[in-house]
Image (cartoon, rainbow, N blue to C red; front, side, top):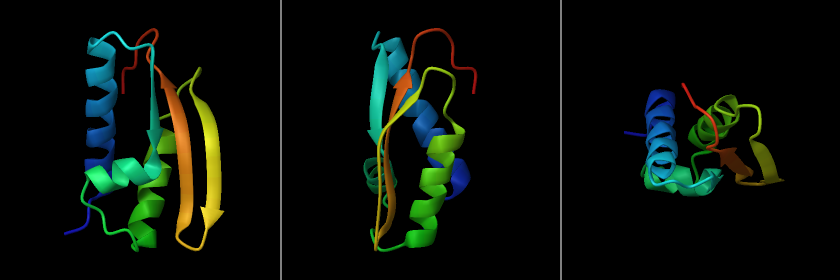
Length: 89
């Protein structure tokens, strides 16, 4: 079964919380990598779109889009999530 929006959000939160507890100042995350970690099928544009949507909705002040590209497989985004301060998501 393909990953849901809820599963993408939970996985992203786990990544951010783990990095924060490790003392990292930020995490750079590519949507395709998050999608692959969730066992997503590379050719599933609708699910990749949900991953992109969750990643951008989870952005907070101080987070940056470092790269965004669109191609026949959908949109790929690289976001730097700042871990300074609190992330109460």
